Image (cartoon, rainbow, N blue to C red):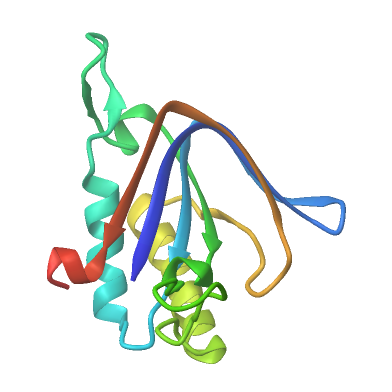
Length: 151
């Protein structure tokens, strides 16, 4: 599982001209799901993400968690995080989870975020063509990969 986590002042997702998810300060999370990922992987990734202290405190140090700043989450499925560009010019996505598997885990991620934060995250729509707009604060963007974390 791969998360691209962006600290944002605001972010939104639009589908067919309509905004379907919108947040103020918080995380825009692009979530890529691999075929071998499980609910356990999702649990560990979400728990780690929510504990990250990557917002600035009063001294300008990245020392505050999402909860400490009252932040929101916009969670967007993003299978292209599993692009393999090693051969040729057309990326391969064979390590990405099948649509059925990925959608089930994406929905699980949404539910898990709500359980742990008490707030339902805003979302895009799985498999839809989306336009994502954001104001990245910092800019502060990081990649979390379950394989690198040993999950």
